[in-house]
Length: 331
Image (cartoon, rainbow, N blue to C red; front, side):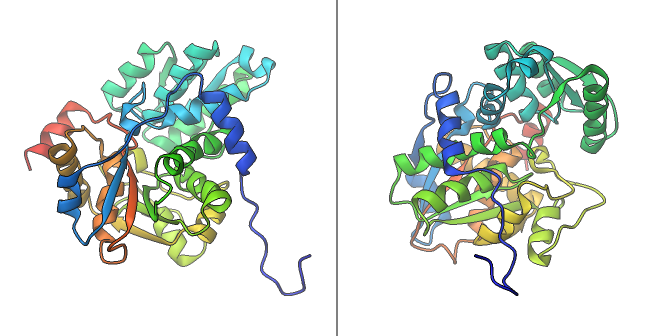
């Protein structure tokens, strides 16, 4: 019972049972992704850290968001499935929903800002979704999605503020702990926070001693700044080539859990993220987008704190466009 003067209890957005149910919804469509260790990467990171790489870049859409989408769409009722769903995205969430919609027979509309990555737009269309290009940024795309939902009776599936999405993201950590029960810590990129909140949910149930750290781009640090201020803050802009984590605010379903559960939260510069992309390419021979490399950049920043530990990072996506890749590898 809560006593007078005690702090408010954080209401976690999903339970461990929700995560297990999400695993059941997606396991028929997605095999477990590899968890691998690379000696050259261990040597490059140093400090006696054993680096385990969770290869979400091996998913059908090259990003972990397919888990979120299959979990969320698989949990819909029949009427929502018939009407269809709508979402705002800059790429990976949209691709995941488009792919899941094609598998499950759910019509999908994805709203992206004008000037969005053309390769990601082509992938979304290729999976059979309707693509709407409108607005100057992600927040504008959200407004467009909300308008279409009200007009056409579509079900909004937010990239973060959706319990099925968070439960789907949590299956990454569920698999990781099955594959590496000796794990000491995880360092995860944070955009909206579904991956990190999912990890905290699973750790609370299975490994309370597991330390989970968040990483954001210095040019899109609203979540990091809010965590350290202990209150939600909003940024005027998000300036980073790591578009998968280019968010300007915290999110209702994830912020309080991040506040309670993260062991630490750091920022990394775009130069550090680009260096991590190159390091993963040279040591693991895997192509990684900026958001997918942010975990490694964060681990390098946290190297002294995590010395001698076994630490997992997640290559959360490999959907880097050709122009950005040329710029990163030629630096």
